Amino acid sequence: MATSIIDINTIFGAYPSEHADSTAETLIKEMSAHEVEKSFALSTWGIFYNEALGNEHTLRAQQHFSGKIAAVATISPHSFFSDTTVDLLVDQPFAIFRFFPDLQEWPIDYAPFAQILKVLGEHRRPIMVTTAKPGQATVLARVAAQYPGPIILEGVGSSNMAEALCVLQEHENFFVETHNFKLPGALETFRNRVGIERIVFGSGGPALSLGSALAYVNSSALTDDEKSAVLTQNARQFLLGGGS
Amino acid sequence: MPKIDVHTSLGPTPFSDEMSSKDAILRSMARFDLEAVVLVSSLGVECDVVNGNKQLKQMLSASDGIYGYVTVNADYPELSIEQQRAYLSRPEFVGTVFASPLGRPLLLDEVREITNAQRRYTKPIAFHARNLADVNFIRSVAEAFTTIPIVLLGMGGDDWRSAVEAAKRWVNIHLAISGSVDADKISYAYSVIAARRLLFGSGLPFAEPSIYENLVNESKVLTTNDRKRIYRQNASLLFHIND
Image (cartoon, rainbow over all chains, first blue to last red; front, side, top):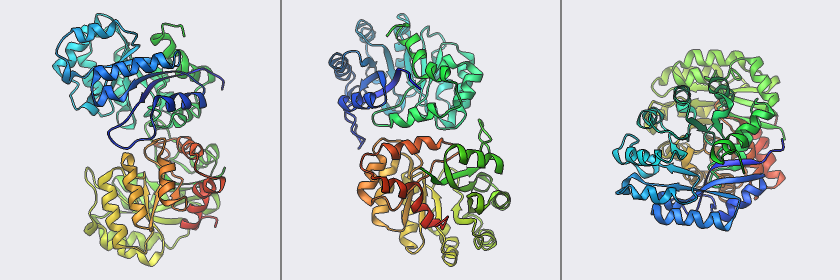
C-alpha cells in the first residue's frame, strides 16, 4: 500500500540501559527503509538527563534533518519551577509536548503537571502522555479535563485498551497512538467505537522496531483508506494543520 | 516462509475469536502462513487446569498442524502429574506449560515434583517469561533439570537480554521470540546463542504474528538458513512436529 507515513512516536539518542542503536542517523535510515516521510522525535536527553539540553538537542536534529523530523518538546514536572519554562518553549518550533510519568517517576495526578497543562492549554498545543499502565488514562482524563488541545495517549496496550476506549469515547480531544498495539482486532475495535480519525501511528523506533509497528497496521483488516488515515492523514490533520 | 508458532493460545480475546475454535485456528494459520501451532490453553493457565486440558485436547489435530502444551499448576502437584500422564503420551501434546501464579514468579521448590515427572516423557517444559523475575526462576529450573528442554514463552519481556544470558549459560534453554519488539533483540540473541535455540512465537491471539515475522526478517545478521531454523526447523526438531 503506497502512502507517506508519519510516525508520531520516535526517540533518538543514548539510553541509560542497553538499547538498539538509536542515534538520529539510525532513525533517518529506518524512516527511509520504511518510507516514513516524517517522524515526530525527541532526544533521550530530555527524558533522562536534562529537559533544556534535550529540547535543544531535538531542535538541532530537526534543523539537521530538515523536513524529516518534527521536533517534540518534553517538560519534566520534577523540574518545573516557573511558567516561563512553558512560555519559552511554545515560542519555539515544537509540534508536540510529551510527558513521561513512568520513566521519570511522577504520578499523573500531580500539581506541577496540572500547572504545566494549565499554561500549555492557553496555547492549545498537542500533548502526548505515556499511559501504559491501567488507571493512568483515567487519571489523565480527569486531570486534563479542561485541556483544550489534542491529547494523545501513548503506550496503550492489551492491559488498558478498554480504559483507553472509554476515555476516547468521553473526550473528543483524546487520540490513541499505536506502538504498543499487538492484539489482533484492536485497531478495528477502536475504529468501530471511536472512529478511525482518533488513531495515530507511532512506532517507538528506532529502539523498538518500526517495521513491526507498521506490520501490525498493514496486516489489520482496515481498508486501505483507513490504514492511510492511521499512518498519515490523522497526524497530518491535527499535528501539521493539514499541510506537510 | 512457512512457520511453526510455538507460542499461541486457545481462547478468545476482547477483540477477536480467531483462536477460540478449530475452524478459527485453521483460518488464522492460513492467514499468517503457519504450518503448525503449539497452543497454550488460556483456561488452563488462568484457572482451570483439568477443563483447560480437556478443551484443548478437542482442538488438537496433528494432521492439521494443531499441537498443544499440557497445562500443569504448581499448586496442584498430584493433579498436574495426573494430567501429564493422561496427555503427554499423545503425539499432539508436544510439551508441558506451567500456569503462572498471580503477581509473583514461581519458585523452584514449587515446580520440582512436576518437573521431575516430566523426565519420563522427553518433551519440553514451557514457562511464561514476562520479566527478569520469571527469567531468574526459569534459570534455576534449567540448572536443576539440565536434561529437560525449557522453553521461555515471551523471552523475558523487556528483560530479554537476561533471557539470552540465561540461554547462553544453560544449553537446555530455548527462547520463543514473542514479547518485546526491540529492534535489536533477534540480532543480539543470535550473536550470543546463534539461531539453533530461537523459536518463532508470537503470542497469538494476543499479538499479531506479523510483528515478530518482521523482527526476524529485518535482522541483518541472519542468513536464509537461520531464518528457516527460527521459523520452523528448530521447533520441528524440539517438538517433533513434521520432522
